[in-house]
Length: 310
Image: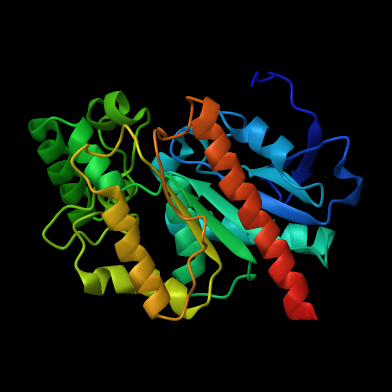
């Protein structure tokens, strides 16, 4: 597969200062449904390698839409999951108005998975969606511990905690603490959300860590299961931000058990994609595996929706 650097599409203004880019195709005249994509830290429009391939592989009745949040690119350092979800709800509402009989699926990559899960399980009223995909739902807490030397990590936590104690939670940490590691400056509150220090590990962003006890897993995946969310999990088998010692299959099985015990049904395409890195940049058979899983999930969402309506 060869990617292009030009992307035909439509730019949608879904709120006063935020936009979403819908990829268009020649076969798109019958599109009625939308796959809304939210990337992770430091990403935005056209920065994830697989987006062009995914947009062109979707069934003609589904369009691929990249959602630009205020946390895009380096904006994550002063944002939060709560703010992201508020903006995502605005985007979902916009496309529901645009296509009132259409279906909407949310898809996240990396920290975008935290946005999608927070959308599903957090308190508050927001438009319902017809499905959700978590691609590379890693733990930012565990990734940060992999990337940061102990002395730098400890200093960053102490600095952030001190700022919050002084009621300066939105003030920025010194750039030398976060910029070289994560590519952006970061507020004290967002840093503690992502790094989620112990012993509580109660950061808002800390949803996918491998060391959670069953009770914590149930608070996350069990809550999603109770809401009967249609969910697919795609964990990258060679994710460079996950320790090689992690048993990824076991982790996904734990999430599946919690989700289904609460009444949900994890999609049959869920699992570990062998050989896949964080953003599936390697292409080839690994990319084909990923694309097939997503397309079949989309087809099942559309089919089940029709069946339920009948």
